[in-house]
Structures are given as structure tokens and as C-alpha cells.
Length: 260
Image (tube, rainbow, N blue to C red; front, side):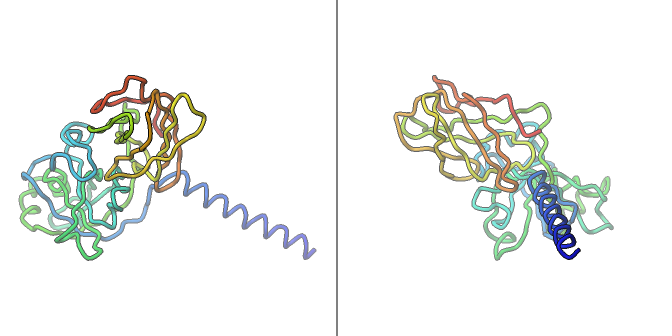
């Protein structure tokens, strides 16, 4: 009897562990709102800054990123590995704010001022900041400067888009740097590997800055397959021969895959 109860207990706790692990691997979605602060920058109804520390460049000016970009404090930026993550942010002051949350994509870092000293802070575009207000109260909300907000992690969704790899300017046959674009789900990157068509071995890429990763060696001969692993849930995706043999710097190559 005792052995039977012990066996049942072991099975039960193993089941809970597996369910918990599966949940962590499945999604970064967080139902719990956390406290933070927020400010805004740029023009009152602007889309945010050009480029940013993540390296997305002109992508921040066009859909689907347009007006959804934000700079975050170092605790969320994570030395660039937090680039591409998506958050829902809503204002906590019901006298001027609606209950509507805005979805923002991490494209930049705000290292000082309100963002210093380990604070959790969002520096939003004027358009994203104003969208949290009750209709007609956008100017009043902006006039308050720094406000208290609630935030939570959410899944990134780029409808109709597949993951793309932009070859950064300056790349050569001996130094190849890639920027990841339009990653559904986690949005962030924990590691990247690359494999030439002439090899069966995946080679680890190094994190350079922002959302860019590189490999040093050579001569580097395409086509290349690229494997990325997300930072938050360690999900993996491999794009076969996505970088062609005749690749060139500043070109963007779109895969046929995404996490959703």
C-alpha cells in the first residue's frame, strides 16, 4: 500500500513538473500586470525615433512597427537581448486614461534619467503614449510627463510576415553580421547558429549589439542556413539556405518560416 501511494505521488509530481515546463516553453504571455513608469519623446503624435539601439533602422518608421516602438530601461533591454520583445502597457490613472493598453515593441534603450538605477521604465513614442488616454485627453496625459503604468509581456504578432535576416553593412567573406526582423512569439533572441551548405556542423554566432549577431571566420561561403533560439522560452527555428550564395551587405533575405 505504502509503495503504491509513493508511486502515485511520484507520478503526480512528475506530471506537474512536465506541465509547468511545457507552459514555459509554450508562451511568454504573462496575465499578471506589473508596475512601472513611462514617459514619451519626439513629436506629440510621432512614431518615435529613427533607428534605435536595437539596429532596426528605417523599419521603425513603417508598419507593422510604426507608432508601436519604445525604448526601455536596461532591466528590460538586457544588453540588447531584449530587443524585439513585445509588451502591453496601460496607464494607471483612471481620471485621464482609458482601460485600453498599447502594445509596444522594444527597439531602443534609455540608459539614463528615468531609466537609471534599476527602474523599470518605458519611453514611448508620442503616438503610443497618447493612445492610452481617454478620447480627447491626449494633450493632458502628455503634459503630465512621467506617469505610473502597468505592463505585462505579450506575444509578438507580425501578421503576414515571416522572419527575415538583414545582412548588416560592413559584412564581408570573413565577418558576417545578421539582424533578425519580424520574429513572432517571444520576439527576443538568446542564441543564433549558422551553417554553410558545404558543412553539416552548426557554428555559433556571437551577439554583437542590439538584435545583431555575427560570425568571424572564412572565407564564408553561402548559401547559409540560420538557426535561432529565443531567449525567453528557448524555442528554436531553422531557416534552410535562407542566405543565398551571392549574398550582399545591406540586403534582406526573408525565410518561409515564423513561430506562428
